Length: 408
Length: 141
View 1 (tube, each protein chain N blue to C red):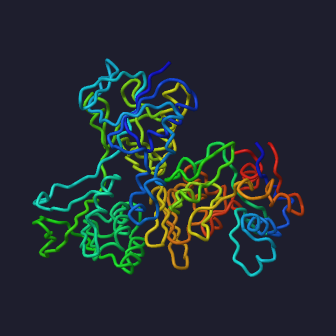
View 2: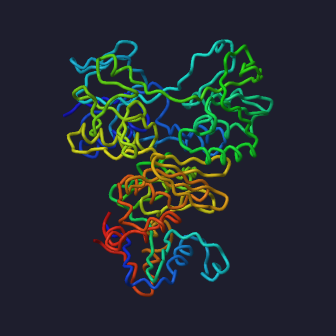
View 3: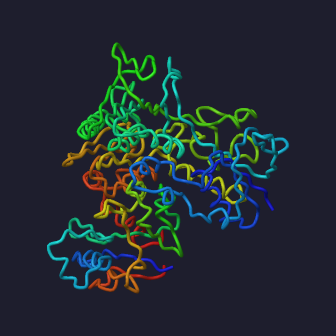
């Protein structure tokens, strides 16, 4: 029997439970959740405010999930690990012993220190279900909302509030929106689309100070009554850092998702991971990577053999009816394809596809993702053909035979 | 388990599978109602320079779409990957994940895919039953 402890109750934690239970159906699993909710899908909080989902439907697993998987859930925060004694401790200093431990503490919103921030009455971040429920309580048809950060979180927040409030202004230090996932041209394309839908932008600027309901931005004063901080996220690494484990921008893990400390694994937003599309180790705080990493950790914790060695960034986001799909890194040569009412760019280097951006016409884009993930040599496919339309016919006949005539 | 496999050497490129698939997943009683309609089948024929073949969900052993699904709308039971239309919010993370391009956008702007006709009144995949040249088969491999 192995005693498993999981710190965290989101995607990586669920992936780990399913990984453990694929091999070990009986050993006890104890899970600690700092949020007082059944596991839910974090990206759905904006859909909840738009009434496109419900509290019930946004549950990431069914109500009986913990029971079916023999998981004891403790709704308390773990504040310390002792890796010599192999114990974890709650805020009330209750101790729990483990044989194998998973740290899946996720990330927290990064809030840049800004003068006068404590004078803002209605100030929110937009990361958790409680954040969303709190925001929903105060947003009304007269609200003027100021969102700091034109990234994925800030813009999904803007979209879900648009029909509820009077005015939304999004400000970003970068000179363009979605700068972490789009190139300059695609940013401009999306910005126009969002402006058409009533979102206002202030770019290349930052708030220098707050004074109650007024933000000073350069030499301008902008009035608001609700402030949402969505500048970015930071990995929650303290539990591992405090016991001397290797931590950089996230918790270090090897391809088995093991940390630098024996019998402690980690996955999800709290880790950094090797990105094969740019040969760099970096945080990739995205739901698919959290599940795959967590699942891999769980299998290894239960004594199995699994590696996660092909992580890449990938995003799919819809904003006011226009969909964007992106994956990989934007390095190397560019192949731009003209698309009606959309945008498509492929990035390739040394005979490999490195990244792509598709706006509008998103169907079958996963075929491009697979070229990046599998490092398919571009001279083994009809690259000109596939660039126009992602198809399997662009692959060699023998490859098609395996893909469509074989068990995959 | 049984899956749908295609043999491109036998495919006529007739697109009948696309029509039967759409019909199987509709509430229609007569296939002629598909006339003049834009069809959204879960199996799609690719063709180029006399080569043609149909592509539908491979029901992968290790399905990236299921692992990547934001909402748990996609799940795998008894080898069949199916979608809970009620839970899907149309984020299309499955489309960015699927290496075969086998998941598409439905008329309601959510994800749709082949469920091997387990989600309709047919006893086995209708595309296979109706393929005139045996280019699509449903078997154990």
